[in-house]
Length: 179
Image (cartoon, rainbow, N blue to C red):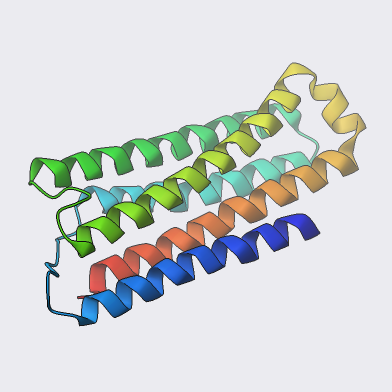
């Protein structure tokens, strides 16, 4: 858990740094063209919020030692996480269809960097959840036998996942309201 907290601190600094660059660059009128946030990002936001909820349902089932429901809710969470990534890709394709590319202007560049960095980190979260899912699916009795270790793993993965949900909410609000 301590290692995860250090990792989250460094990831926070990455996004804060990109956010400061975004904010400072937006104040310069030269070569700054505001882009409209693709409507699919609203769907992305709903999906990531839903995935945090289903992850907590999975953890609740785990605490009640219901390994079947734990596995099912982990599957749903991973599926929603993949749907989030797919909606992000489609949103970026929507921008590209409008002629807004990574090299279009500083605003679009930072938009791609922010959403891309978040997506890469979310892939790490999906990998962690998939690890938990495989561990619980292959031998559910081992998960319950080694309850404390599995609980710790689930807590670390959930902390990371919820952190990424919070990061996305901050990014989304900033992308909506910053000039």
